[in-house]
Amino acid sequence: MREQISQLIHQFETVGATDVHFIPGDQTAQVICRANGGLNEQSSIPIEQYRSIVSHIRYEANLKEQNERIPQSGLYPLEENGMRVSILPSRYGDAMSWRFYRAVVSDKVAAGLLDPEDDLIWMKQQTHGCIIISGTTGAGKTTMLYSLMASMEGKRIISVEDPIECSVPGILQLELNAKAGFDATRCFEEILRADPDWIAFGEVRTAEAARLTINAALSGHVVLFTLHAGSIAEAMLRLRTLGITKEELSVCKKIIHLYREEGNVRCTVENLQALAKVGS
Image (cartoon, rainbow, N blue to C red; front, side):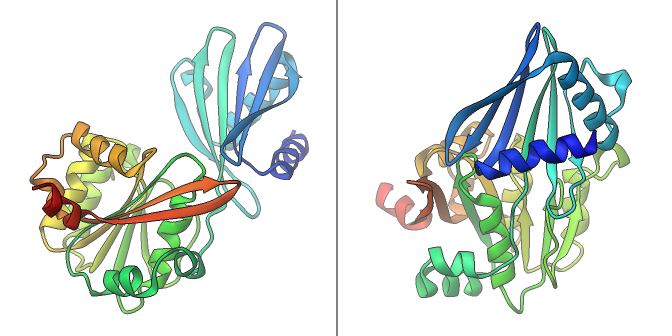
């Protein structure tokens, strides 16, 4: 079964897929890949074969069979890259999504997209506040996060990730484990005692995570985090809907918005404090 899944993964990688979605039906499972920002349907899989794949994925990702009627997520081990697996209960059984991790540790990504003086040197000079990396699915937010961490020489950086996608030399990387009681709140409590210059947070999805990042910035740290949003305006609106007040948003200094154009990653950077002054 592992060989069969490896063949599937190779097939999806050939088309440049970042995500693969399996939608089970009565007789077959529909397969849809996200590549270059668009969705492409692949050959469907017979339902019995698909169920065998799900069973194997469950086992390898340490997802318990007795919890098959609730949403679950985990990691499927690959030799070179990781694969995040999400499972949702549906009418015809488990619907499954795969997310491929291809983040790289290289300062060249940030250097190629950001202005050396106005962005990179400016960031190195900061002592507190939030720097946001926003973008849609597959835009390269995580890759930019790792690249910025690799670019900040001379800084004590602690990252909070769920999960850790790849190792960054010189960075203390912490992985959340809610089952063991090491959730985001506990993690931030411990980090703030560990003398960080920068705190990097994988992705802000909840009101709790938004509150923790803002509070850490207000306490005198630089906090770098990613946020799923379609534009800079939508990123700020997301933070407001997550409970961050307009006054608290003033701690957000700069946003790096990533998007894809004709398959290439593009970047727009805005100075949020300058925008706030213009709007005041």
